Amino acid sequence: MSVAPIRPPVRILGIDPGLRRTGWGVIDVEGNRLMFVACGSVETREGLPLAERLVVIHEGLLRVLGDYNPAEAAVEQTFVNKDGASTLKLGQARGVAMLAPATRGIAVAEYAPNQVKKTVVGAGHADKNQIKVMLGVLLPKANPQSADAADALAIAITHAHHRQAVALKMAVAR
Image 1 (cartoon, helix red, strand yellow):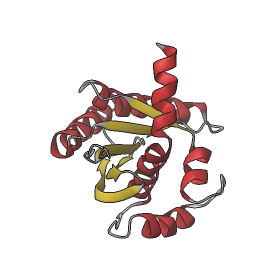
Image 2: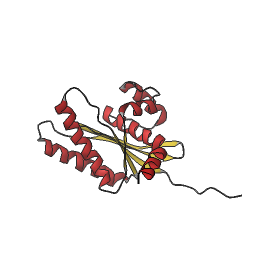
Image 3: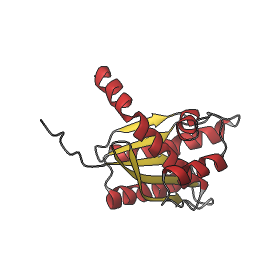
Image 4: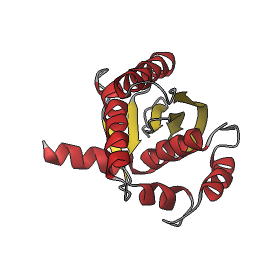
């Protein structure tokens, strides 16, 4: 009889990009078990020029990467709204959110907002309160102080559930 090798937990960083506040959440995944590690947000001052705000986001995420050393990362895809300028600025924050882990050699998966909601709540059009309630069920030790941090944890959970499929797609694409 052979014994299956013991695999260490995989640490995942979820990022909810935003120009005012970029949420981040770190979880460990061991098999089907999810364990809360930490969460928070990187906040920028509204009066700063765009380039400086992007630097603040980048440096904040680099600190999180250094503090928690995740093996994988996931970012929410940009939600396109009616205001093109706002969408473009959000896209720039999202680019910085993807760049930070990529500079450390960490693969970054992307998930649509509806996929995150469907994975965590079971419905693609769930509201922020429903996400927070399910986070309490899935990660009882988590107590996100902002909706952005809660969303980032939801993104990390989504990646935990879909990471095998993402890895397979990336392998086939190469």
